[in-house]
Image 1 (tube, rainbow, N blue to C red):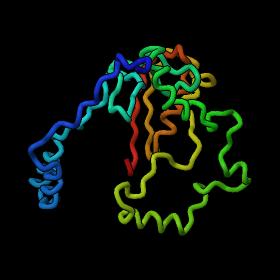
Image 2 (image 1 turned 180 degrees about the horizontal axis):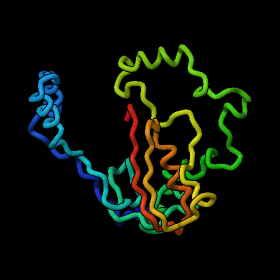
Image 3 (image 1 turned 120 degrees about the horizontal axis):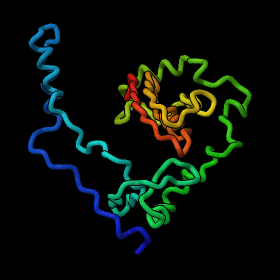
Image 4 (image 1 turned 90 degrees about the vertical axis):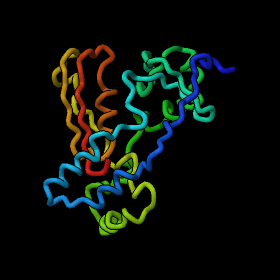
Length: 212
């Protein structure tokens, strides 16, 4: 049995529901949003909606074994010293998860030598020059199947919005950050992971985009 297996627990299946999960959406089709009464009904449809798996109260241990459908239930209190992208509850769990994590931890994109392709190819980045193809792709989003043409990552370099060492330089200062029309999580991850290990302030983060 691999190290760290003692703390692994089966991931519970989604709770069974007797009602059709699409029923609230079906009700929306019958609403007239010009009618104030229907506006209240529109808001009421979502008033009791809750996520199937609520966000964890604390950062969980990153030792997750997908093929075994199990995960460590303990809090992740020790960040990976190399990448700072994930945290583990113990050295044992970190060792057990290394086979999964090493592809990210040792990825060339984390190297100081990495450069985006538009820099290497000495060309203008695609996000600076919208093309007819981009407009065509946007207009066809509804025909692209389950993901609607969405992608997890965009095509702009991640930016550290706080850049603490050259700005406030206060490791106890609280920040409220709004990532408006951010498109993805790169800037969020870059900003958080660039904070020093001794940062003890509080972060309030709003991520808002037209295509969540």
